[in-house]
Amino acid sequence: MFVNREEGTCPECDGTLEIVDADDATLTASCTECGEIADYESDAFDGSCMDHFVPFHLQKMIEAEESRQVIDPDDLWNRFLLAYSTKDWESVLNHAHALLQWLNVEGFPPHLTTGSTTGHLTCQLDEFWNRAVARAACMVALDRAEAEVDRAAH
Image (tube, rainbow, N blue to C red; front, top):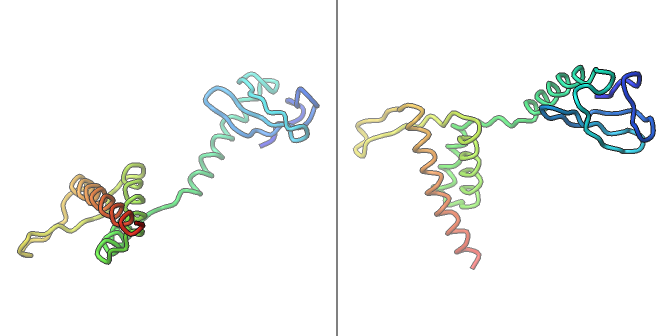
């Protein structure tokens, strides 16, 4: 996003300013000609700084949303279980880390089926149960996988 030259230019060389970052109080602009970088308060650019503030943040939010990787926790859980059952320890490490990151940042856990030891009862419990079981399984699997990878390396 560029600053209209009528509203402001680089104080060093009179070049065109490009908004490159923003926080809750300032905009950071870089000169397209000399590369000078400076922070500008809300009254900068003949008072139009706030006209740039909202669109810049909106664009950053759109770009972040577009780049966000969507994960299917059920699919990830199934790949994690398959890796563990086949002793593919590198994949266990990757899937367990990815699932833990998903649970810690994005939200909903995989839909787990829980059963009795006799097989007479299977059910799907609530999100709290599924989250706790998935996290615990990942932690146990990480310990085992790290030990196996270390053992294989020596």
